Length: 526
Image (cartoon, rainbow, N blue to C red; front, side):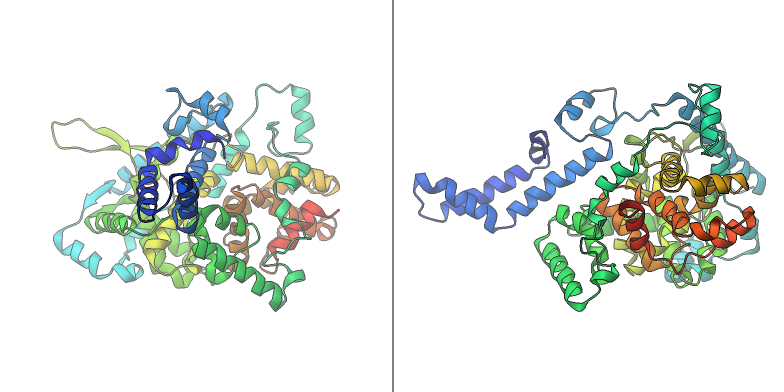
């Protein structure tokens, strides 16, 4: 790490804590002046002070990396008032994408107000005393409480199809007509956005090399190899080093240690009780106020995850996480480091007071149809809603929000779709041309896999092994790599079909697939 991160140790008060502990250690021994430095260094390394410093610096590094600052020159260049928190410029830098982004935001804003008016339901309404008591009494079984015929009338404000259609309208005005025609021969999104090559990705994901030990590799499935992984995991957890935990995720996490490794990778500290207090505050908001989106999420969850054989048992837990998430204003901080428009809605105020626009829902997130699939796999890692919520919100704020927002960020849905098309073209151009010739666009077939990061399409254990790598490599780019790998794996069958319906049949069931060998074959094997 560059030296410019060190000044943040002063900012968080850690430096004073270190000095106090080192001073106490030196004074407790009859050390000579010439040996003070040696004793201080030994104390630093023999106590938890070294771990605290490394974790503090790593946490700051991950914050800065989130907004694209990798070194001191980036920091100095971007550390001015034109940028938001941590020097982040939050305006979409690509004009033609910003235009579409604005249109999409306007459409969602209008949809919120239109639905509220259509059903005569306010955006937010305070529950009566008896209603609050009832919600509190039913907190552990919200699926039984939240029923009613009126709920069936509510629909998600937008679906996977809606956002896909918007993406397909984006055009790069800087391209010539000839360039556009050439791109359309290969791609459904002919935007000429710069994405990484297969060679770049091979370097980026080098820890996936088949020659290296992976937890989910059949080549290393012996008890000895598994014991080695578990031993290494235990050492990392005991030591408490955040950076080491994230690095270990690149090789796949043991089932029993996954939640703890992710917790450390996201630099989350559960000591002190602040997370419990925050969740309790959000819970009280759920109890006190009923939101328009509560009914939307209720119906959406019942139509998706509640009917999924893998996830239906988590229905009540998912309601708790979803309803608290909607009310969490801390999620709005996404707007301080990513080019996203927070949704606004007009609230009705008292007579004589003009209406005003506020961020709605308070989280700043309008849930896409199937939003609960972003949470459901995590339910296998933790049964307690409080730590589960904390880790999910960290996962969402760093990665998952990109999957249903429009921007030019390398992790955005748009960029990931472009990367999928490029990677598949590089790996198997014959397959791409064949599928396009029969009107079976590869992106149209793979789009939902990318949108939901394969949640709901792969078995939960495979989804979690994929998400291990998202956390470990700090990138969503592994998702379109896997999507392209599925096509390449089933290329023989796909090359013998003659219609879109047949293509959907070949690619319809992914539950037998294992993610690691597919990704390895895509990146490292010809």
